[in-house]
Image 1 (cartoon, rainbow, N blue to C red):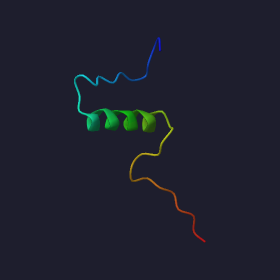
Image 2 (image 1 turned 60 degrees about the horizontal axis):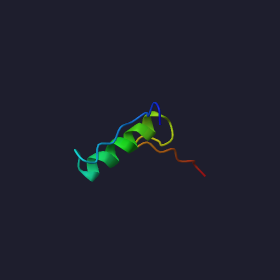
Image 3 (image 1 turned 90 degrees about the horizontal axis):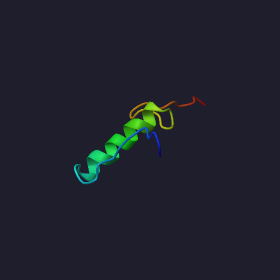
Length: 43
């Protein structure tokens, strides 16, 4: 992409670090809820 939201440097980071950064960006952009935040409906 011309203007990516995130650059993943697989030549410089461990896979776990890359995955963590992707998840954090998806949370930041609103595609995922932040870890530990869940809404439960009461029946």
